Length: 450
Image 1 (cartoon, rainbow, N blue to C red):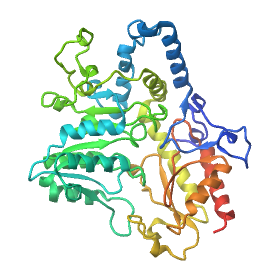
Image 2: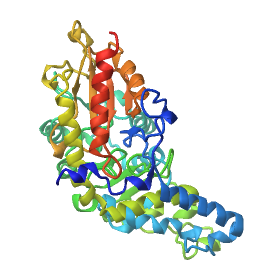
Image 3: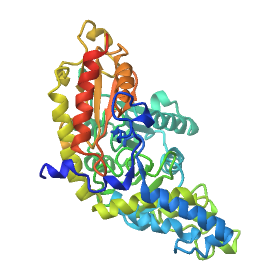
Image 4: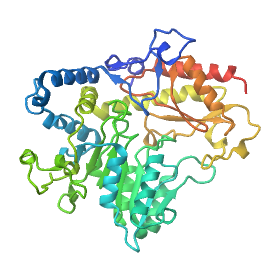
């Protein structure tokens, strides 16, 4: 990939950027686009999404209820998800019937866990990463309780080795090999929200299934970020949201994957009419006849405006070549930002930083202000995100830097107490965004009093 591929983001003008003055960038040109490196939290607004949502408003106004079956643009509301599902399936490496566009992330997580977490006296543990996203942690604990188990015993959390910040592949596989007979469900994030680590999904899935465990994945930070091959990897199930790298808007509709090998073995426990066979759905039969596969888990008709917004973004993904093309650009863009950050006078190699799980602030007393990158350097172990941990740990300096960066028009994502996440997104970020982020970070760290 040549340098012009990083300077120019071919789809940048498909997105609406806040201006510097919109986000409090008072120290730079107020009318210029801000440096937005926060697509891992909320993607930017695609112009097509805005246009499609406005179009649906007009259809609502002109057609009202008739829009369900007589849509002027061929997106009958009864079948609108059919425009989205094949695109989602392509993104996650699945067959169309293995994917449903539905619900919200944690609701879908509960649906899948309640379907697949069937503890027995000998096999009842839930294996997950320590410091999983809080909503996942709450779900794991509540599912354990729902099945009469003490979460302290049932939820088996893995943490990095002492003095390290991410989990090693061999440590995950070792636990599965040694304790697999007691593990009912292996559930990790595809990409860890705090560290940005991309877990070895195929290896973990195969190891889990070899020991008789069910394997599911939370792909909130992975979908639209890294290549996924859920069907070929043999993943049992997965869930994701769409408002991060998929740019569907805050609280956008989520997604669900169910491997076709389960089609003849399970049925939805919590049936709803949208999961019913569409050929008889509107005949209102009293007995539930589920759609085979993931779409049988649908409960209510999808929110049309949310689906339209997601469709606008996925059309851009399709034109961009989906993940093969975007991944190549993402790898280079993230590596470029990392190289700039490593040249900072404030950069500290991660090997010299105390442990973050839990924060070992006592070992960091007296250190001069600085930062390290706790995200793995290998492209095979990360997506677009770089997580910067600011030193001394527990000093509160990260929040000061975060606030001051915004005055220069740089938007990242803070994760207390010490981590700032920066994610150069392949669809719309450029090397110039990375240049500015690194330059202003140095400037901020030089000027803020400690």
